[in-house]
Length: 172
Image 1: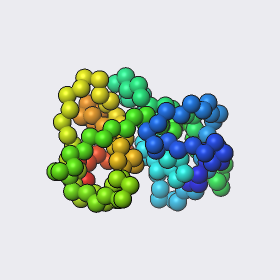
Image 2: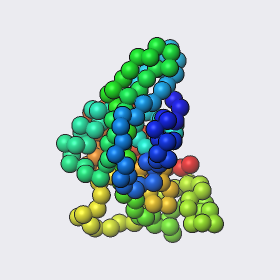
Image 3: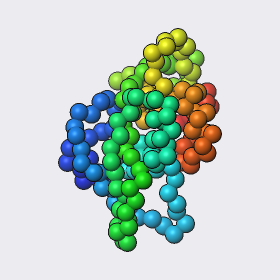
C-alpha cells in the first residue's frame, strides 16, 4: 500500500493522538496483493499513520461506546484489478497519556524525552473513572493502549491482525 494522496494533500497524521478538524472525502488507498496474502481485520497501511480497521472491529468499539476515535471512510483499491473494498475505516485514536512508571520500565530515551527503545514497560496505576479506554502512549505515539474491557471484547471476536502485549513483555 502506498500513502493515500488525500493524506499527503491535507498533510494528515493520525498517529499523534490529536483530534483532526478536517472534514475528509472518501480516502482511496491503493494496494498490491500477493497470491498468498489475505485481508485481516486490522491492516498495516503505510502513509496513513492511523489504524485501518474492518467495519466489524468498529462495530465492537461502537458497542462498547468508545467515543475518542474519529473514523474516516476508506476505499481499498487493488492497483492491478481495480477491485474495491469498502469494508475498512481509517481510525484516528484521539488521546495520549503519559502513564509510564519510568523507574520500573526499561527504556532508552532520546535527548528530547521521547522513547528510543523499549525493553520493558510498566504503567503507573491511576484510579480515574473518566480515563480513556483507548489512547496512545504519550512518549511513544505508535503504541496504542487499550483497557482490559476492550481487549477481552476484541479477543472474544477473534479478530485477525490485532496483537496485544502485556506491558512487561513488550520490547522494541
